[in-house]
Length: 281
Image 1 (cartoon, rainbow, N blue to C red):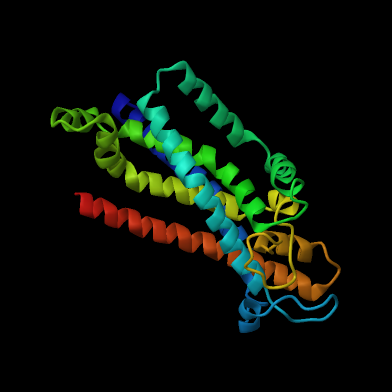
Image 2: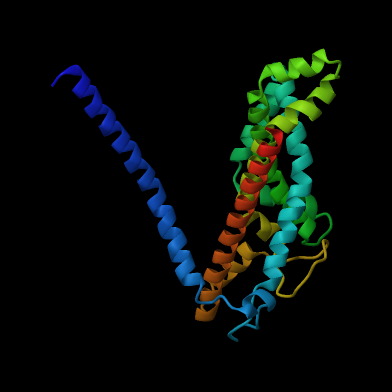
């Protein structure tokens, strides 16, 4: 076997190994999605999206309160985390060499690794105990804390990828540093930042532990920010550990709805990112 043939064989084997690795990563995901869909579709109905939970032991009902509560909690988390996370990322990218920047970067990395239940206990002590009341605001704050490090680090990395010539050109035209950042650098990295925000939203949308300590749960339909609200994850958890078969079916349906919400948000973000990129080009 000559050298050329040997290199081709090694290259083919390496490409085949990469393909097998991709399949090995996708097969479990495909099985999970298929299983959730096959189990959840059995309990999907109009009442599931419009009704509230029935009393214990009575079949039927729905998760309208949990769906609305999840959207409220994720929206509050985004309102809390987006300004802090994006501004932190901008600061880290613009002053990346300072000691304070290094400390902030270390803090965000550490916060990103803190277990969600610990964040839930912290939010419980800060936003629940002083007011003696579970609330949607407390749940949104807990989820927002989890989003901040993801958004901050994603924003920083993407801003650092913007060519330095763009910043230099803006400064050469007389723009201030702040104006150059917010009118040139941030728009150039906006598609990637949006993707990072969606990833953060997708992560917190599936969290259960922080909500058990903050927004708790509510069998009834509620849109008050100062009262306990239901969420899909907590509702699925409650139904899954119950002894009722009908609740088990609804738990699978709730899991399917949650996966669908994350998928739709990701798809819309992809479309928005592609549109922004076309406009920019």
